[in-house]
Image 1 (cartoon, rainbow, N blue to C red):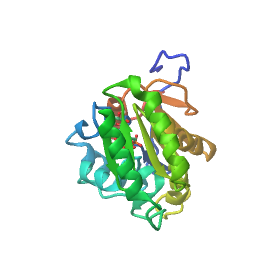
Image 2 (image 1 turned 90 degrees about the horizontal axis):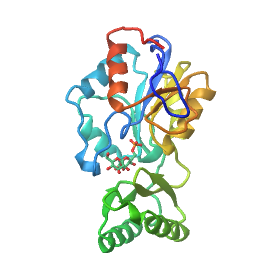
Image 3 (image 1 turned 30 degrees about the vertical axis):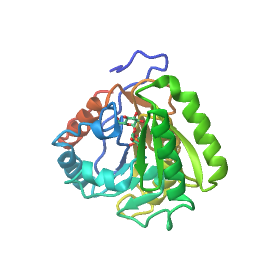
Image 4 (image 1 turned 60 degrees about the vertical axis):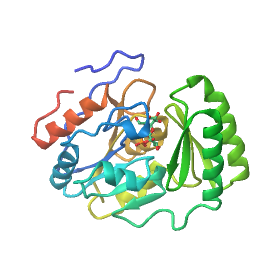
Amino acid sequence: MILDDSPQTKPGPPALNPYGDALFLDFDGCLVEIAPTPDAIKVPDDLPHVLQELAARLNGALAIVSGRSLHELETFLQGFDGPMVGSHGAEARGMTAPMAHQPVGLSDLQQEMADFASQSGLLYEHKSHGGAVHFRSDPTRQAQVEGFAHALAERYRDFTVQPAKMAVELRPTGFSKDGALVLLSELSAFEGRRPVYAGDDTTDEPALAWAEANGGFGIKIGAGESVARFRLPEPQQLRGWLSAALEGEAWDV
Ligand SMILES: O=P(O)(O)OC[C@H]1O[C@H](O[C@H]2O[C@H](CO)[C@@H](O)[C@H](O)[C@H]2O)[C@H](O)[C@@H](O)[C@@H]1O
C-alpha cells in the first residue's frame, strides 16, 4: 500500500516483530500532532496505556526519544513507565543520564533567550538543558531568530544551535538522539534487537539513519526528504500502527 504522493514516495512500515524488534519513538510531530505552542498539544487519553502495553509486548524494548525536557515527557505520558530520553539526548530515565552535569552558563543563556524573545514578541520555551525561541506566531522572524541563536552559541560554547519546526533551540553540545540510541541499545531489554525508529523532524534524521544502518528501519512521519525507508503521513497513522501491533494485526506494506 502506498501511503504518500510526495516526490520521495515511500511505503508504509511492515508489522512489528514483538520478539525481535526494539522501538524508539520521537514525541512532537510523531506520536502527537504539532500544535500552535508547546503547551497546546493534545495527547490522546489512551496513548500512555498503548505505549505501556506495547512495551510489555516487546519485553521492555520501547523508548521515547525527544527534544523535550524529560519532566515534560513524564507529565504528558503519565502511565507509561518505560525509558525516556529528553533534551535531544542529554537527559534520560531508565538508564544512566548521558549528561552528568548541567552545561556551563545554562541560566545566563536562558535569561538571554528569554529577554530576546520578550523584546521580539516571540515565545520563549524554558528547557531543563537549554531553551527555545518559537516563531510559529510570526514566521517572518526566522532569520532574526537564527542569527540571534548562532551569535549566542559563539559565546556559550557548551551549546549547539538546533533548528526545529518554527523554532530555534540551544541544546547541550555533544548529545544527540542517535547517540541516545547507542546507549539504549546497550540495555538488556534492547540488546540484539532490530532497531525501529519513528520521527518527523530534521533532528530525527541521524537517528533514522542509525536504525537503517544497524539492521532495522526508519519511519518518517509526514512529508519531506528522509533517509527512512518507510513513511506514514501523520501521527494519527503512527498511533494506528502501534495499536495494530498491540492487537497483533499485520500491516499491509
Ligand atoms: O524531538 P521532538 O519530540 O519532536 O521535540 C522537538 C521539539 O518539539 C516541540 O516543539 C515543536 O512542537 C510544538 C508543539 O507542537 C510546536 O508548537 C513547535 O513549533 C515545534 O517546534 C517542543 O516545544 C521542543 O521543546 C522540542 O524540542
